[in-house]
Image (cartoon, rainbow, N blue to C red; front, side, top):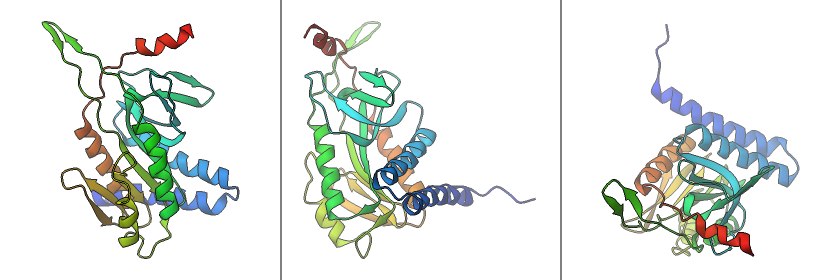
Length: 241
């Protein structure tokens, strides 16, 4: 009888993701359909393997002042403590306070796509986020500061040669402020990550990139802690407008 093998299981997960992305890229002719297909592959991966306190969806993010982000391909948000602002027929609007991470999903990695992702992620990070004190039996804890929102890009291939090298680093380092990308996966080649302490990027060449990236994302989410307690009544004022 063949024994269980953890390396084979993890490799199979990566192969499944890369295979689906490759099929989407090769089988779908329409650019919009191709894009939707790629997004769905990543959304399925996150919603299957991230802890249930998180959910991933395509959508817009809004703050209590009425400001909206651009539409993001993948938003990872809290579903344990935070409500939707709006969810109808597949159109989702998520309160800024509940967001943990945002990603753009593209077919390939290049300067234009990285710059585009940086710009889209900026529209989320600049939103205002509320935070209320947390009550407990003997009083209340002070309001916690909003967590740092992770940003990244998800692709199958890279136009650069090498796929993960100096040109990628140059573009990533061009925006280390509101548009910085903390994580990115190029399923066919590897992934990159930003070290918070050194503010330096590491490029990880890996033939099981989808799986290793997923584990890295889960680890980053663990260190993010829990989103702050949302002041939901700050949104209700718009009902009087």
